[in-house]
Image 1: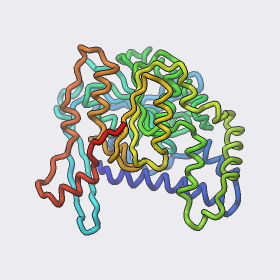
Image 2: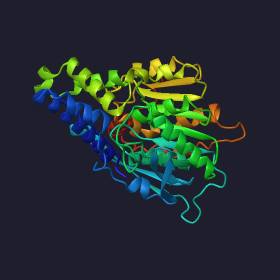
Image 3: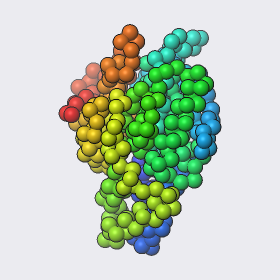
Length: 376
């Protein structure tokens, strides 16, 4: 699967939402439509390639019923993969294209005998479970049963409106209950990207069912992040963009979805939080600034913050899987799993691409991949 394609599709989707947002603001002064985008983003026709996740061996699509509807998931059994990177470098334009393919290490017997536990994967805003293919492969290769879920209102899951945690936390915890009843192996862990990371934290804050949470680039206050979109408005529309328009849109969205963002600040929900948690954030993230994660981490002594100086922007950092694989698996072994439950280091080693040996080309490859640099 082409990582550059994943990045391009994600950027296109984000740009599309931002352009629609500010077209509504600039030319219609229409906070009504902006409010619609805030609570009812439609990802069902998003051009995400489903082959990486759905094409894995021992992967099944299952819809679980919860109290408020159904949650659509792709279940991936623990299995060993062989990862293969191929690079195309264009030094003149200072660009690198990276393609990742994976194959079962043993097509006849891919599943691990005794899983380390179950990891539920939660995608970001205006996306769906299929963007979680890379991380599903990483966790499955490390020996975890993996459940990639469509959050309420996205993909194939039910839900007419987003509520930024008010209802989502109940749905996610309902999914955990169904998984436990179905015999999925404990401990149960959450891994969420951006909006999904915030939903993971909200969910774990109200139950003891989750043994650990990993949140990558989560927001703390959705109002601040929505207002931050002003910075990404097309230049021609910037004179029309004003804080009052955004504020009116948020107010209308809250009424439509029956929620109050002031009551859904992540750090405020963690006053009695005790779940072992790892937060990862790139220092170069401008869409959801790293200060959002710093505020969350300060809310509980059980939260460990890992900041990568060279992680890249909000869309690129999650795709640089070799950059954060070791930090994630080391933390799980240290903070969540039983001392006798030893994780292999093979997964992260396999995700480290082989360089070409040409110093000029390899410098471009290293720049694209990023190099670990924890500054937290």
